[in-house]
Image (cartoon, rainbow, N blue to C red; front, side, top):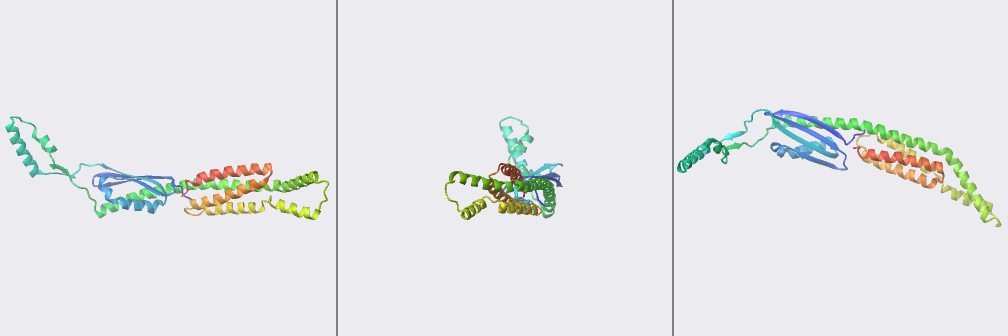
Length: 288
């Protein structure tokens, strides 16, 4: 089953009075590129976040945003009473000396290290809860990718079917094309060498050799095989690169048929095949 590289997933985790939101967006990329934003208390887990992303998402441009909002009154601040008293005595003494009576409490709260935020750390149980919520978001992204992949597979396979139908339409023009080329060569020879003695056997051998260069039977067979292999490969998992290689081979055979055709109706069919193939290649850029 094909997967798109476009996906979206979101999950929420409540932990110690915080609401932690995990939001993941993915786009197409040739490599695994991750852009990570985390709150400060989770920065020591960045390597684990990246490892989980590569496990679930494999390839693409990944934007992983982790936001934390305080939902309850925080107890993460400590008040240094001893230091505050020392500052208070010094400030009171100084205010007496300068004969001023300022509001000391607001000043105390602004003094260094009086009100200090305690470093946040998460224990193993809290990490497991965070990890579980993040994995839920990854699962949602993966499901989104699979849903998008189904739509892409339907589109590109329908275009491969169109190419096969166009290939089948070449046949009636191909038969008349060879006779037209033969007649044209014979008329040209008769006009330019009408007074010369003709070795009919030799001429027929040269004619066959020349016409073989215009034969597109092998190209048609290879094109048909490549298209069928494409449809078969589209049922496999993570086959975007492989399908890209097959599409290149399809393009080579179409181009060769076009260069050998020398027939206006076949040329038109070739142009239509190329148009469908270009649309397929555009879609393949987003296949995992």
